[in-house]
Amino acid sequence: MMMVACGTREVKENTIAEQLADRLLTLRQNGYMMGHQDAPMYGVTWDGTYKGDSAELGKCDVLATVGDYPAVMGFDLGGIELGDTKNLDSVPFNRIHDELIAHYERGGIVTVSWHPRNPLTTAPRGGLDGQKFPEGSAWDVADTTVVASILPGGSQHGKFQSWMQKLGDFLQTLKTKDGQPVPIIFRPWHENNGSWFWWGQKLCTDNEFRSLWNMLQDYLTEDRGFSNLLWSYSPNLDGQWTEERFLKRYPGNDRVMLIGEDAYQWGTEEDFKRDLRADLTFLSGFAEKNGKLLAMTECGLKNMPDSTWWTRVLKPIMNQYPLSYFLLWRNYKEEYFGPSPELPCAADFKKLYDAENTLFLKEIEKMR
Ligand code: BMA
Image (cartoon, rainbow, N blue to C red):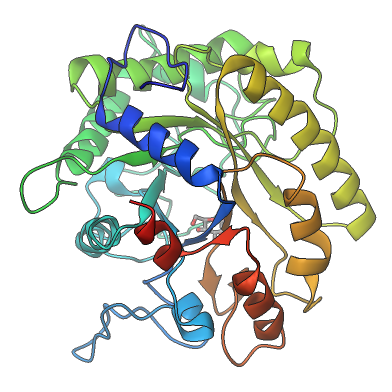
């Protein structure tokens, strides 16, 4: 039975995306899943397993810490738009392809984000002089006409069409051995209520943002026929949502199946807790009323200066809301958000793992 309201336009009954939504709803009865960005790619103390001949397939900091994989793995396609062989974090796309499918085939759930370069300012081969930040990148916010420039009639529309095509071509390859498209939680244009990406709050009008969302969604859904994408709308921690403000950029009930929030503690613990509670109260109410799933699509405390943060700060709040999952951002040696066995926070992460309502791969595999 279809339980998530998805509208009638782009998602027909029993699509792969709907089957994933049903699975998420079933899993939610048992708790919320743990997710990690780039989990099998690199870790706090090790470089990409894809580098060199001694590739250690399946290596993962969460696995090394608790003996189980995250239930959800996230991957980013920034760079695919220019046909790069590696993404913006230097992970080869063929590796993303293999790991994403491998995680699905071992019973896990996958989610994809996209930090495309700035279509107005980027150089032909991307970035400017190989710089990651900010010129030419997703973080290049020097110009407020970027979104307008890629919409129909804009000077970069043709260029952006070719970017969408390259994205679609890669998504098209994400199939199981027997040729079935992998179900994917797809969350483009994230953190759009902030102003650090070229599609952000101060960088385009509400109408331009909605046209941007629709252009990509209509291209992938209607022109390319993807029915395996579970569309996730993921603004950033805000603290001040009202329904009126939220609706200004919300793409619409027929266009979104999951409402997410990216929520990092950058400032004080008190501010974080206050804002997160306020947001999850609003978003869970909105999700409930509109038949949507809810998740913390990115979260974390950078480099874990507080080794009890997960069970002391994050978990008590998450316990109060009907979340499907929380996804800790990547473990990179200069910037990590997840556990690693040698870190002081490993003990706290084990507590998180042992909690009855946190779901990792082994538990969700059993519930298939
Ligand atoms: C950001 C940072 C960047 C990274 C980007 C995409 O939050 O982690 O270093 O390039 O995400 O993964």
